[in-house]
Amino acid sequence: MSRLARLGAFIVATLAVFAAGVFIIGSKEYLFSSTYQLKTQFDNVAGLAVGADVQVGGVHSGTVTGIALPKMPGEKVTVIMELARSTHAIIKSDSVASIETEGMLGNQYVAISFGSAGQAEVKDGETIQSVPPLQMGELLTKASAILDSSQQAILNTTLATAHLNSISAKIDSGQGTVGSLVNDKQVYNNLQQTTATLQATMVQAQAGVTDFQENMEALKHNFFLSGYFKKRGYEDSADLAANRIGGLPQATAVKTFTYAARQLFDDRNTAKMKDPKTLKDAGDFLAQTQFGVAVIVVSTGMDGDTQKDLVLSEARAMVIREYLVENFGFDDSQLKTLGVGKQTGANPEADWGSIQILIYPAGTEIPAATPAPAVSSSTTDADPPVQVTTAETPKP
Image (tube, rainbow, N blue to C red; front, top):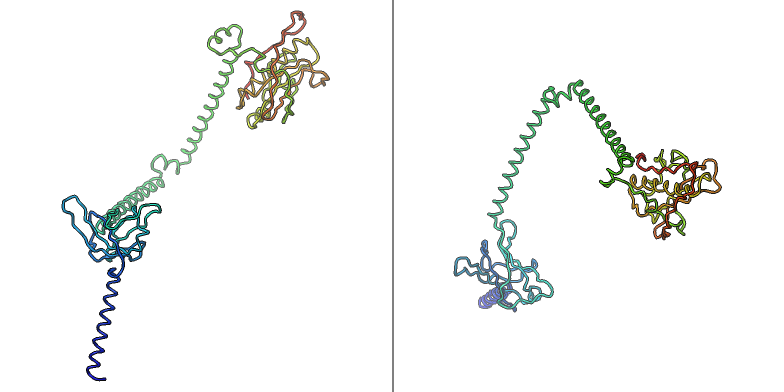
């Protein structure tokens, strides 16, 4: 090959390399593709320079073409960017620009977030929002403050450990109250005896309060003091018909509790209860179960005046209801009474009568109440009087 040919080949190769470089640089700077301009503003660009990358979603999509200082104090630095037209569909009016760093000490670049669907597209030359850049100086200051706090916490922990060691040593040597409790058995035993004495005193005090309450309840119904307490609202109602119904509901009872009158009452002709704790199983069931209505059905034996036995059965039902309502938590409006008087076909154990507590499911219709029975005026002095006593009902 002649010298002239070699020279021609060198010139052609040089021109090809130059053209390739121009195209590569032009492609990077978007000189040969369609672009549009966006702006954003920062209080401090944190070392960002002209020519820095602009990334959208982590992809190189533009270049910083200019950085303009503010004209007045208090204004912001304006960053001018050229972006590829392909990003126009994903950058919206709510997109945000931020200055990021490649690694810890790399070059700064501008990152633009994707916009939200439905937001307006940005226009050429529009200014989008920005967030302040994170500066390494501030980060190092915060890290230093955290380290100082950590050192102080470690120092406090060390001092606390030293105090605990000192306290443990004193306890081991028997110093102080705790040391005496740990090392001196006699001090521990005396403390236990004192605690037991205090507990016994508390039990006695509670028993005294209970006795006082029972005595006060008895005084409420004393003939001579009833007027005094009645003025203060302590007198219980004697209306036997307050919770009485005319008959049993038509539904089938889901639970039945049956008791002989001998188990609950002092005498054949009294409504004074002697052992109300017998009703505990029925009371617990009422308190722990959802039900529609419960009926206390009371009957008497076949002996005695029919009219007075009817009143006696009403009184017993009222006393049983009062005990259950006062000692077991449930809706007392669902508990009704039904005194039926004489009981036919009585067995020897039920010669004083019997008690049934019938519990019906929710939705059971309650029969209407009937008029209160009147005690016949023809009752002779030989008939024993009905004793209705609710005040002395023991607590469970």
